[in-house]
Length: 571
Image (tube, rainbow, N blue to C red):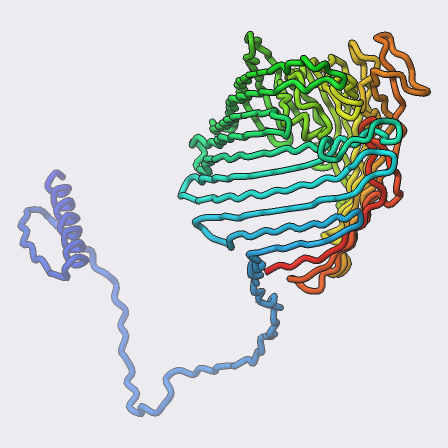
C-alpha cells in the first residue's frame, strides 16, 4: 500500500512539472521511473466503427440551410445647438489729456481762470501742476468795500517702486478780503486799504506709502507736512505734522496702529484798540502747542459682521501736558445686503489753529486765543442701505460731549464790530442726520440730506452763528453726454449772533451782551455746461439766484445773484 501511494505521488509530480515546463518554454522533459508493484488494467469495451469514404467529393456531406433576416436600425441625426462664440472686447483706456484750461467772467467784475497740466499714464511716475485765480471788485449796498481774491498754485510728483511709492508736493495760496461789515453812512468812512486782509500759505510735504500684497506683510502710510501761514498784520504760524499708519493681517484680523505728531507755533502782535491812546504798546502773543496721538485697533470681519475695536491716547502739550483717552469701537451687520445697522463710540482732540479759524471765518482778528477742541465722546448709531437698485439711504443719531468748541462773535475792542473774535464753550450736542440718494447710471444723480442739532451750551446763552437746521438738495443731469445741468439748494435755519453793544430788537443776555436774530435763508445755485466735443465746452453758472443778501456771520451780508460764464479747453 505504501508503494502504491508513493507511485501515485510520483506520477502527479511528473505531471505537474511537465505542465509547468510546457507552459513556460514548450520543452518536453522525459523522466524514467522504475517502481515495483502489481498493476491491474481492466479491459475496455470497444465499439467497432468502420468509416465510410465518399469517393465523390462534390457530394454534400452536411445539409445546412441559412435564413437571413433583414433589419434596419433607426438612426436619426440630431444637431445640438452650439452657443455662438463670444469675443471679449476690452475697450481701450480712455485717452488722457495733458492740459485743462478754464476761463470765465461774471458780474461784479469777477474774472476767473484755472489751469491743470499733468502727466499721462505711466508705470513709473505721475506728476501735475495746478493754478487758479478768482476775484471780485465791488461793494454791497450799506456796507464797506467787499472786494476779494483767491490765488492758488501747487505741484506734485509721485514715483512708483515695486512695493511702495513716494510722493512730494508743494503749494502756495494767497487770499485777500476786506472787513466790510459796517455801514459807512453811520460811521467814519474808512479807506479800502485799511480794511484789507491778506493771508499767505506756503507749504510742502512728502508721503511714503507701501502696497505689499502678501497677507503677512506690514503695510504703512507715512506723511510729513510743513506749512507757513501769515497775514497782513504780522500774525505768523508754523505747523509741522507727521502721520504714520501701519497695518498687518494676522489670520483673519487686521491689526492697525496710527501714530501722529502735530506741532504748531503761533506768533501775533496785538492790534491797537479802536480807541487806543497814543501811549499804546502792542503785546506780543506766542503759543506753542504739540499734540501726540497713538491709536491701536483691531478690525475683524465674519461673513456679514464687521467690527473694529481700539482706543486713542492723545497728549496735549502746552505750558503743561494733559492726557486724553478715548474709545474707538464700531460694529455693523448686513441683513441681506440691503439694510446695514451700525453703532459706535469714539472721540478725539482737534487742533484749532490761526489757519483753521481764519479759513472758516476770514473776518477773524489777527490775535486770537487758541484752544484745542476736545470731543470727550461721540456715541452714534444708525441704519444705511438700499431701497431699490437706484435709491439708497442713511439715517443716524449721535450724542456728543464737546469741551472747547470754537464760536465767533463780533469784536468791539479792536474794531467797529467789523472783525470777529473767538470764544470757547463746552456743550452737549444731539444730532439727527438723514440722507437719501438717487442714482440712475451716470445720467441722473440726486441727493437730499439734512441735519438737525440740539445744543446745550454750558456758559453761553446760544451757540453763536451756528444753525440748528441744515438741509441741502443737489443733483446732476447728463443729457447724451452733451449738456450737463447742476443744481444745488441750501436751507440754513435761524441762528443767534452775539453783540457786545446794544442792537435794536436784540435780546439782553445775563452777561450784558445781546443776542441778535439771524434769519433763515435759501441759497439756490444752477449751472449749465455744453460739451461741443471732448476738448471744448462752455459753461454758465447762476449763484444765489433768489438774490437774498443773507448773513452767514453777523453784519457780513453776501453778494446778490452772481452770474459767471466761460469756456474750457482740454489739450
